[in-house]
Length: 75
Image (cartoon, rainbow, N blue to C red; front, side, top):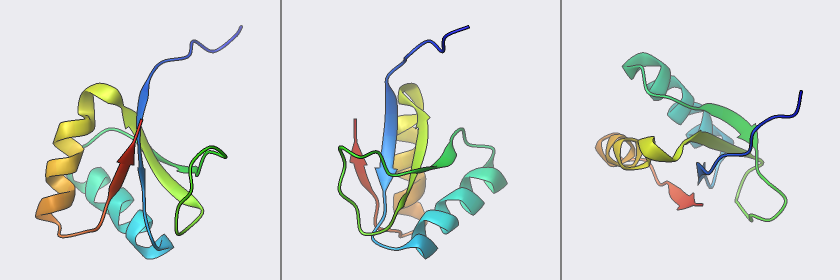
């Protein structure tokens, strides 16, 4: 069975530590998403990115600002 492709919000980070902090914060606050390898079409400082449903983008951006972490978002 083929996976259905859907639009996702992909957050990239300058360091692996920041990517792991995003994972920790999202899990602690029950936010959606997971760590993934950075897609080939995207350039980032580290090899990890946070992938979440597009509908959660604004919520995750706000959380990242509250946590004072540098997050770059790409669709």
